[in-house]
Amino acid sequence: MKFIDEASIKVEAGSGGNGCCSFLRLKFMPMGGPDGGNGGDGGSVFLVADEGINTLVDYRYTRSFRAVNGEKGRGRNASGKAGGDAFLRVPVGTMVYDEDTNEVIADLTQHGQQACVAKGGRHGVGNSRFKSSVNRSPRRTIPGTPGEKRNLRLELKVLADVGLVGMPNAGKSTLIHALSAARPKVADYPFTTLYPNLGVVRVAQYQSFVIADIPGLIEGAAEGAGLGIRFLKHVSRTRLLFHMVDIMPPDDADPVDIVNAITNELRKFSPELLERERWLVLNKVDLLSEEDAKERCEDIVKRLNWQGKVFFISGLSHAGTEELAREAMMYLDQHRKDQADAMIPIDPIDPMGPIEISRGHVDLDDDEFDE
Image (spheres, rainbow, N blue to C red):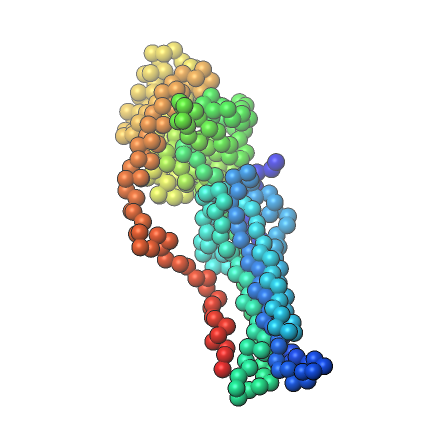
């Protein structure tokens, strides 16, 4: 299946059915009075997060979606049938934007989470609701209101605990292959990875985390060079970054210059992403003897003046990968514990919190139309 992480769609909610103007006329009731019923409410459009979907390919070619209109009212005080809602399934991790205003409408991060993106129109009111002691035969009705229309932009940001960043051929795919059951394409040429790959790293029973491998970055990526900058949004949700570096680049480049170049691209893309916890992972130590590899890695760390954690590994021979996975698991567990301790308790008086009312829709009671 082709990986699609962006899509633009148009959604339109159903219009409310019009109220009916009718008078009851039976054989023995020639002056039966008004009996026009109300219309039905229009259907709304919902987006539903589904963990069984991992791409937005369904919205690449079908771009317009519409809910059902409400039926109009009928005589004998018969109300019209409400229009059916439209439910559109999207992957977990999808962000929904209003394409016209660039407003964030929803961020669907949990399976089954729903967001109403277009509110259905309100039903019309029939003439029977306007009958009074001074108006025995009203001919007034209220039509149904149109449903909301919106142009939406869907962006998928994969949910992962750990993200891998680095130059092409730094060994990111090899590492995810070594740590998890994922089998991304691995080859000895740049830009082997063309779309993000996810893998589940199992450290121990009931202890695991999700790792994301994105296409490699190159200098100038923030200006559109290469592929990786397009997918950097996928690591924006991660709690921890592995900065992968090849200690023996094939073009004899200086690893220090490579690290500084990627750091600069991260800064251009998102200063917040650069401030996230980032570990330096020096890869391919198996290309040198143990002493030479240690000496070269220590020289790289010293010249970088790196203040965070550093790991010497080989994705191919799996040297150091288990220690890296254990350290990451310990960090993530502590991060989750700190987040749980910092959570604000829910007010027992109002556990649901404030209710957000969709703009452009006023919910009036039908009794307000009584005279």
